Image 1 (cartoon, one colour):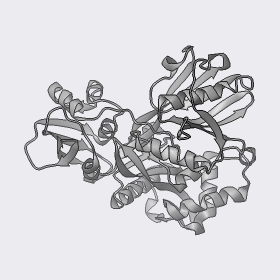
Image 2 (cartoon, one colour; image 1 turned 45 degrees about the vertical axis):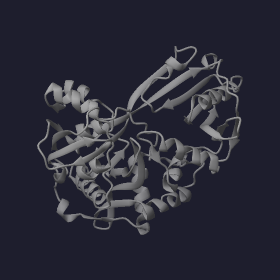
Image 3 (cartoon, helix red, strand yellow; image 1 turned 90 degrees about the horizontal axis):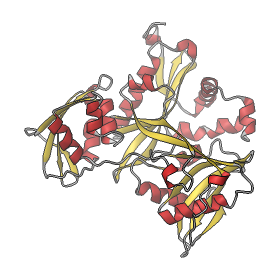
Length: 405
């Protein structure tokens, strides 16, 4: 099929709750969610339909119609993220799907452009998504910005020396200590999303009923960390483990060790892009790293006005020549002053010049790769001195993004 064939005959509009049945049917078809899978996780057909009702009310959901039939759709969840301590309004793009017979006609390209345009209008300068095809999204200016490390720890490898003075208590899913802990963690963690009610609903969507939450409290009864887990077939599956300090980390591992007579292995994930083997008593564990979340600057000017920095020398000024073939308002030259922890757009002669794509700029400013690394990969054009000064001006911290909306 040729891109654009017959696309003028299609209509794009925002979906409403009246479109719930078609929205759900397209999701189910595209992602092949079977009745058996729903039953295995405790869902009934009516329940999953109604679970998407809030999405159509509170998210920006666009659909393409062939007559009265919904053939393609994309949803944008309004969220906030911590980017180097600054709270950014962002959009998390999800539910991206098209019926196969309509693929190759440029429909999704048109939907994506409109969704990102809406984000710009709502002053959401950054977007994230979980990619089903990295090459596809790279064509639209997206780039990988975070990793997930999956690990397997045998029962005999669970840290035996992990000791903590506090205690662990199991709580329910709506427990305020648990919810507030994540907010505290997000406030202190670059890249982390602040979960609103919609994000929490997605977080629990496919969780089984016997998924537990365990909170670690210090000796003063202050919550300092938690883990969400499921024990099944002699394996402890850790959905998420966060902690505000080393004590809470050790306390949670001590709690895991208390289950050693019940389990053979621990399966979990880390989103800090650092292997955990070094921290283990027996570091001979299995770890698999893979790209996780892709991101994209939606509006360069809006993004930079919020962006923190840490230049070693005051008042360093860069001219960024940005190529964005998908969103034309980002295509051009931006003169940026990094000074006293703040970034500003200025009209003055730049000290250094840098040329790069919007995808590369997104990865650079999110801290996924340094300017030096991107330069070695041929992704940034600049003099070596400019690259060194740019890395000195930028904060360097790998994003922690654990949510899959």
